[in-house]
Length: 84
Image 1: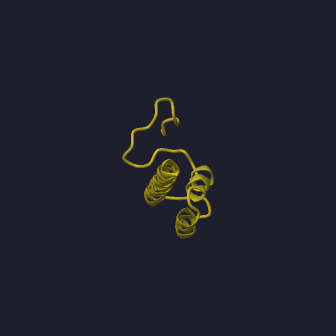
Image 2: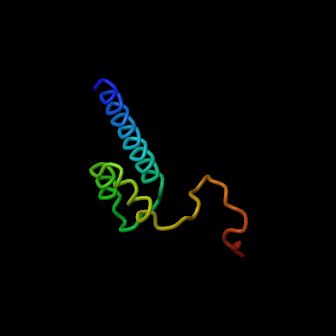
Image 3: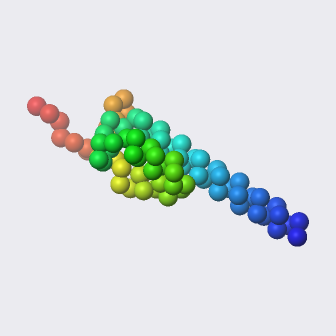
């Protein structure tokens, strides 16, 4: 019985770490991104916070409007054509 208690505690701790880690990553990305789909960052933040684990995953697949690099980050080689 004692082994089950430790196993359950470990599963709960891992779930909490995953939940807060994903939410933190998604909120940080939301904060830094200039635009998101729907142009409503408040709704995305609420979705991320109210749906544990699923909210950040939905945001990562549907929220960002593009995969263009943000200001201050290097551009990948062979990305966009240079402006003239």
